[in-house]
Each structure stands twice: as C-alpha cells, then as structure tokens.
Amino acid sequence: MPLTNSESGENHASASQHVEDPVFLNSLREAKIIISIWALAMVYTCTYCYLYGYESHPSDPAAVGPAVSSWVGPLESFDRDPTTLTTPFGLGIPDWVFYGVVAPWIACLLATFVFCLFVFKEDELGDDEELAPAASEGGSSDD
Image 1 (tube, rainbow, N blue to C red):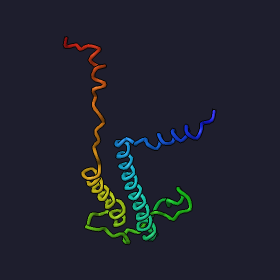
Image 2: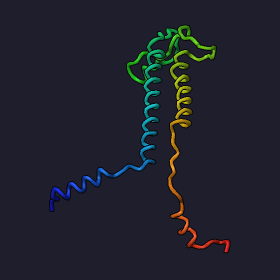
Image 3: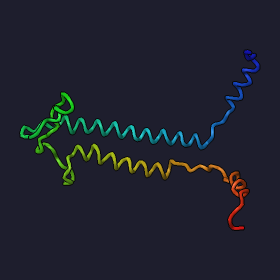
C-alpha cells in the first residue's frame, strides 16, 4: 500500500530530526584526520623515494649479480653508484632515505603527539549500571 503525502512527509521529517551520536561524530572526524595523515605520508614517501632514490642516481656499472629488472620486469637495475649518494649528518644512510623515510616518520610521530594531546576527544560512553544488576542477580561467592 503506497504512502500518502502526509505519511511520507512525517517519515522524512522524523528522519531529518535524527541526531547523530556525538561519540560516532568524534570518531568519524578523528578517523578522517588519521587516514589523511597516513595518505599524505604515503604519497610523499613513495614519490620522494622514487624521484630522489631511483631516478636521480645512475646505475653502477661495476655491480655484480643479476639486475633487479630480471626479477620484476623491464626496469633498470636498482644497483646504484655509491659515489653519487650523499649522507646527511654523517649518519651513513643515503640522503633520499633520510628525507624520504626517516623525516616523514619523525613528522608523523610529531603529528600523532599533537593529535593525541589537542585533537583527540575522550568521550563518555555511559555508565555500566545497566549491566550491574544482571551481574548481581546471579549471586556472589562472598555470601
């Protein structure tokens, strides 16, 4: 049986008056922020490491062993000439690893710290009073 205009209007009005749970809204907002930070870090890391690690350093002509291209397809060998690599701060790792992997990790740690202190909201989930009577009805071993 089809609804009349007045009945469908009432159903629509009650649906629009439905208020979302604040715990759900906070968790949805926090999830969007976390996923955005993760996606940004992933795009930056993959792009930076490809451009400055793979593309900017020529292949090492003295490299021994099979080229990586024989395993993964028509890519050039990933074996790079060590003389073209620079090591920032004397850490012994290539510059593209430091700026493409270590720096984003540090940035994500700082973003997580700021997020947890200033953005994350701890919501009240309610009291456990509804569960307490059910547990006490069964009796206790202290009697």
